[in-house]
Amino acid sequence: MFHWLEQRPFFFAVMVFLFVAFAGVIEAIPDFAKQARPTVGTKPYSVLELTGRQVYIKDSCNACHSQLVRPFKSETDRYGMYSLSGEYAYDRPFLWGSKRTGPDLMRVGNYRTTDWHENHMRDPKAVVPGSIMPAYEHHFTNIADIETAYAEAYTVKAVFNTPYDQEGMPKLGTWEEAKAAALEEAKAIAADMKDEKVKQAVANGEVPEIVALIAYLNSLK
Image 1: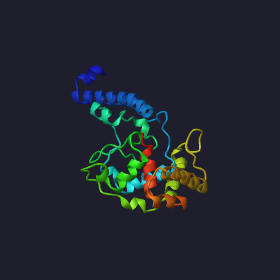
Image 2: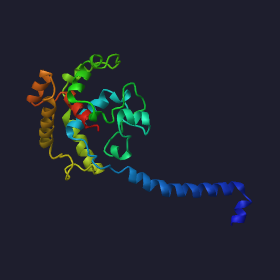
Image 3: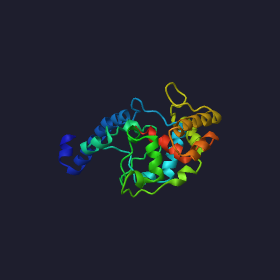
Image 4: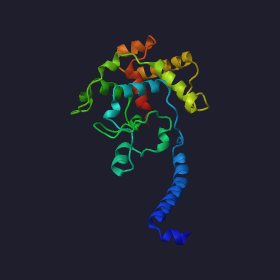
């Protein structure tokens, strides 16, 4: 058989390709599956954080900010440890991005505070001179859609077996329980903010978009 293949270069090349492809699949797929498993400490987003993530997507923050620290010294010196695939195990969709008009936000929760985000979202130029980022003052008045975030969390739990309500993982429970938990989380964030209207809205049982967005940004570590 090998003598026959040696006399026919085309078929020999096809057989080499098939064997190399098969070996590659055998080696790559198990390793890919292993690397894609959640890293230690990675958890699904809480309902409030997921609400903030939806605000982030709605206002196209990912168009100017990536969430992917590449394994280059220039990036790890600035942003911290490079990204691992397992850190995105519960992200749907991924927000890796490919453009950095603004800095990468993968680990922004490690070095920015609630107070910083509040001032920055209201008036970016006052916090970062020369910034071209627009102000997002509507986040302080728009009320976040917690119910849709709960529906998304419930869906990924049922469809993708996302480990909500498991030991050491965020609680989901019923809609009423999730709403109460999101409000308590929002109160903790609002306590560190200066805007009195935001504080009052949270005290009245509403969650402005800015609070949900900050919850999401604080979770990026």
